[in-house]
Amino acid sequence: RAARKALRVGIVGGGPAGFYAASRLLSLPGSEQTRVDLFELLPTPFGLARFGVAPDHPEVKNCEHKFEETARDPRFRFFGNVQVCGTASPDATPSSVPNTHPSALAASIPLDTLHEHYDAVLLTYGASLDRPLGIPGEDTLLNVLSARTFVNWYNGHPYHSSLLAPVLDLSKLDHATIIGQGNVALDVARILLKDVDALREYDVPEHVLAELSRSRVKRVDVVGRRGPLQLAATTKELREMLALPGVAFETDQELLAQAVADVDAHPKMEGARGKKRAMGLLKGGSKTPLAGADRSWSLEFLKSPVELLPSADASAEPPSPLEGITSPQSIGAVRYVQNELVPSSSSSDPSSYSARATASTSLSPTSVLFKSVGYRSIGLPGLPFDARRGIVLNDQGRVVTPAGERVAGLYTSGWLARGPTGVIATTMFDAFATADLVAADLAAQGGQEEARGDVPIEKLRGDRRVVSWEDWEVLDRIERERGRVKGKLREKITSIEEMLNLLP
Ligand code: FAD
Image (cartoon, rainbow, N blue to C red; front, top):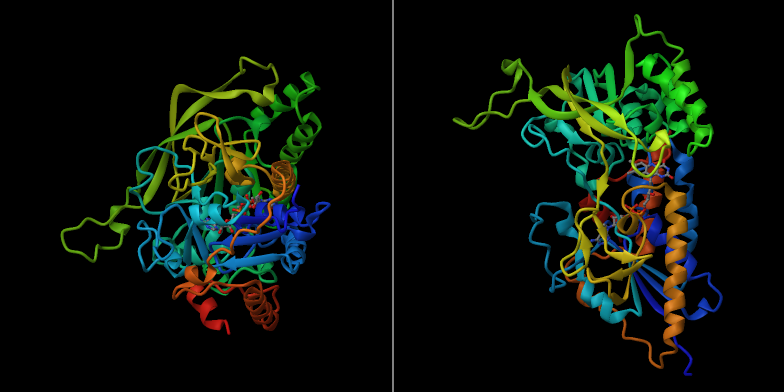
């Protein structure tokens, strides 16, 4: 067998999945000749570690140190500001993107081209859309937005850096509702209710801090379709919410008592100990009593939104600048259907019970609504994609056609492969497993005399700036320095244009 000269792997997406897969590929026995090129849409690396993880959880971002180590390996190259697309022309901006959109500043390269130039291409481009509620009012009323958009905004994502003005003005809103009860929902609730001064030391952009300090949000309802035992949020996040100074908490005590009894009656329930701890925490509540509290939040169970209704006070709406065109109205209330829990056919474990709508409905006022029912990936034209689950079709990471046939040389990992659930550690194990699979498949194919030609980076460049790892290190230093003078971790640069102008 001829010895392989160099194993070349192209990775699409520079979030945790992409970086962990790269680090694994470069540390496997016999990987001295392996080369990894990573293509990232933004000029900045790290995906949701930078733009998802909450700014007041800086310890979670420690994974970035590991990624930096990988990036400094001479066998690794970073190509930032490069959008991998499914279309044919490397110069084309995808037609769905107006040329004023920040992604129009990115170079683009078709997936086919990568496929031709690498022994294996690993897709880890994550989930950049959100799941809709699919109910009336969702797309027509003002002050209805996805948690993802809000999270991107407070984390300084360049696509959402100017989200709030004039779309959402926190200085005019007092009552927020979040649909969904996962950790993302609690992140949003915490950022809305936490004293803004307690956020200043992290990397929240200055314009976001300014907007948050004008916020008049006093009440946040976090609403879920199932009960306390099916709560998706973890104990750590619940504890943090309950410990917020000056913020009271309320929930349905009867439901909680029932949940505690259910855990006691089913000691073998999945995660029973954790659930018991979480129920105990919720029963204990917050130290701040509701009466007289300046700010409060609630966990509301067994409710699904069925309709979003406009604010009754239409006169409060700003006049339309265009004559004859009616201004959209703001949300004023949510209509819910009351649910009941029903056991699943396969298990008697109460934590797996599902929600079933009853005939009873209720109406609750709100002045802003955040949808936090999950992120969703997008497919690339030509890529086998399961639109219902929002993932690339794959068999343990190997991309397959709808008929189940393998697409040679194409792999996927992370949220794109598994769906938008799981913490960074889950993503890491997943990426390691996929990297092992890539290496094993390529080893099984045997050696290859000639290395494939290099990917046509020069052609790809066109008039758009491809951002190298050294370029990112320049931006990183500038962000840290701008942060240092303000006494915070970093001041993120939120404009891609500014980032590119700052590069040598
Ligand atoms: P991503 O992190 O989304 O990375 C995908 C990358 O691909 C992005 O950089 C994106 O810009 C890039 N990309 C997209 N399209 C293209 C394209 N066409 N071409 C090239 N590149 C592209 N986990 C924890 O452990 N602790 C936490 O506290 C925590 N908080 C979270 C908070 C929020 C709001 C969210 C949403 C998630 C949180 N997670 C947390 C989960 C964690 O962020 C994920 O497990 C992890 O980021 C998934 O990694 P990924 O690489 O699959 O996707």
